[in-house]
Length: 554
Image 1 (cartoon, helix red, strand yellow):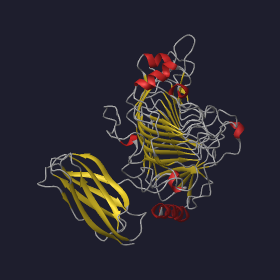
Image 2 (image 1 turned 90 degrees about the horizontal axis):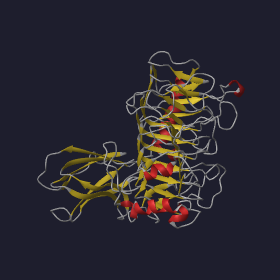
Image 3 (image 1 turned 90 degrees about the vertical axis):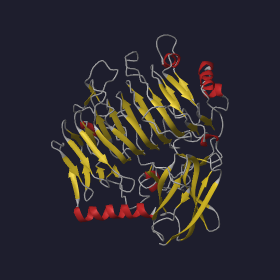
Image 4 (image 1 turned 180 degrees about the vertical axis):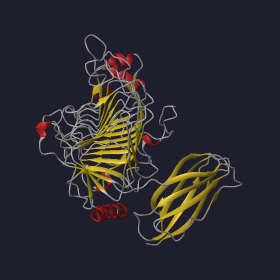
């Protein structure tokens, strides 16, 4: 928290020193936005085709609320046209933040998740395929200027979006319900685009919406949006892994709304993404938030497919899954029976509609039978903490004793990281949301950084060994090195002088070699700590335990 607070202070100081840059004109040349300025969007700003907008790590982009909503230009937003690129490459220490002009980043509680719709959002348009009858589709949310998406290049590259937090958006361009802009809109974006570590916080419409395309998204946090968290349609066929969703207790939509197409349900390609390791938390099992369908975790309709693996779903006030079954014609049940829709090896608990699988499958026996056959379980995943308040009580890591902590099924595709746990967070590691998200900055989630581990030598060492950390003493980070003489299942953990666990740094199977782990102790006090390497009995060497001492001085 101290590191993030310092970052926010530095951002505020830089805006005072260098002033704000008000952006009123479209970007018609290769352009770079730098962290020593605060950029303020005034209206709809387009990155025109063939040009690249590069945004430095740590850059803040704010947006004005437009006064004249009847002109069709009622929101400030950034739109990346087909053929253009956005290179927004933040880091966990220096995220790129899109937010409202009313958001003082030096004050953590000046806005809350109730402050939605203060500006538009980020829209990226590409040239990949959709299932629409034309390749020139006007994107949702923009109606006063051509904003077209679609094409024939599924490998299209619209750039990079990493460690980007998009906050308090979703303003309606006309003041009419239904014209709101999603937090992140992806229109026919291709697989050459990289999107990882992205947050949508308190948007007045959907969190992320895909309109066809093939782009994949890894590490996404969608929090307190008024409408659906994850919405795909028009034939999206990308991948997703490590998605976290929490819906607001006041207004909410579905955790996942999955459609086939707009008035073109029989068009191909069908929407058939593959998604693994999600944690979807609703508004509360007894909550009654405003919003259409806020009681459903997943809704498949209009001939949409899609495959979910190793998820955790909880705290929705209604049913778990609704799969459209029409009296005639193709529907999402058709996709299920064709093998294009599958939900497997996931955990479901604490739903308002009931506790039996038939009820949670909207009373459809065929849907309940499918869920049962795919290894789904009605069992508590034992998340560490669920809270909708700013009490740092939201910690969606499964407990070590959780049934979700092992035995996960992850698709065997190069995109997916092979992990043993279900859900979006490793029960034996930090929170990947730490340091860069509004969820952590506003106090919803604790600061629990992920330890950085790297295999530095593939050669087989002569013995199992745990080296002295360096530097020592240290503040606030230090590096721990260990060596494995054979493949082994290990745990590397930090303890205080009372023997209490402070943090699990590494847990799981590792190949033989030498590894380094960086531990960030920003959130613990000065003192003596111990770190222990524990190698379990499935190693040929049997159980091995080594412990060393280190000193944190602040």
